[in-house]
Length: 489
Ligand code: FES
Ligand SMILES: [Fe+2]
Ligand SMILES: [Fe+2]
Image (cartoon, rainbow, N blue to C red):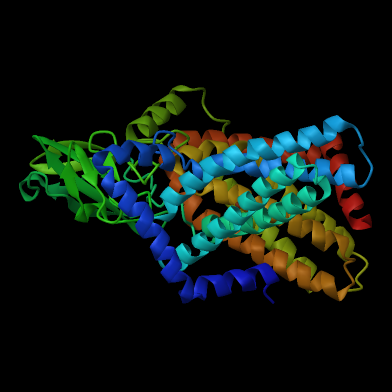
């Protein structure tokens, strides 16, 4: 069952009769910009937020949303008699006026962005703009009524404006979160972490963008990269435009930049920076070198990336070798964790095989809950931080741990003899199996890049922590208390 707002949005998206007025408005805006010639480019860049590295429209939209909501609340408290002072009314009026300034600026930025979208998104954007224009008109009307002393009617008008604003905000949210308008569309794969040959130099001609593809194992997808030789230097950047995914390899070189064929965003060849919008996000960049007449590229890490280069991994191996020997007889971390996965699998099978009214079933479930929690804890604290630089799986694995903890809590809440418990237990078993198997298939393999010495060192730490978690009275008591609380809730 879809909600009413979803149904209304769907019918707006399908309403082709909106195309005529929408294209008429877009044509007027485009003609005005074309008449100003190149002078309009800096204005457009300013409105898109190219200078900010982020779309400007949502930033400006917070002004009318914040101020008009404040005015709505102040008017409401005045109407309900909660606040009678004159200052309350004055503050509401001031908030409405401040919001008008923000709304006009937000409309200009929104119009600049909207000009670039077509089809169903243009219709939704047009409806979004119509609602916000209605909100602006009602607010200005409300201010005029208030000045003439017709305060009550003015409050009704601005209240209606606030409702129109909220409806408009819903459509704006739909465009961004559902339709992905305005979000970064570039491929941000960390591969290749080390230099990889992609093309013989002789095949690249001056100022002719050339697409090559790389395999990203974690994403299980090809990643496109565009190579450009310009003034004797070879440059490389992601080929999927960050604006809306246009093919930069089908674009052209202009003033030291690569222009996207879809909406004309221009990216600096050397840095991937946006020189002209509508795009606001830079393109992914690659270091380039020539070896044996072949072009080799390596992904340039972005802020927040944790992927290590092969050189850094090798340095890490050397450091691990030089450190104190791991505990004698230590097994590798992935081996210790794999064994623990097997234990968890056996515990699940045991609980599932027990009869619903078996008196020992609850205790077995508690044992399973405790071991699962310990397992997640050692991975969160020791293993995941260590493998994060060599595996892309860690953020997802953390998210799955959270999901497993939530599912475990639900299972514990149901008594082990209830039918809901069986269902919840099966779902939890499936989720744990999926999580453990994907660790074994992918993360444990990637962890091998850390080198044997480091994995044995981590294995020793994990075994110590497993033992401590099981032996420590305080830790066991804490886990037991948590399990009892969940069972009783
Ligand atoms: S997709 Fe819009 S400028 Fe590239
Ligand atoms: Fe895990
Ligand atoms: Fe695990």
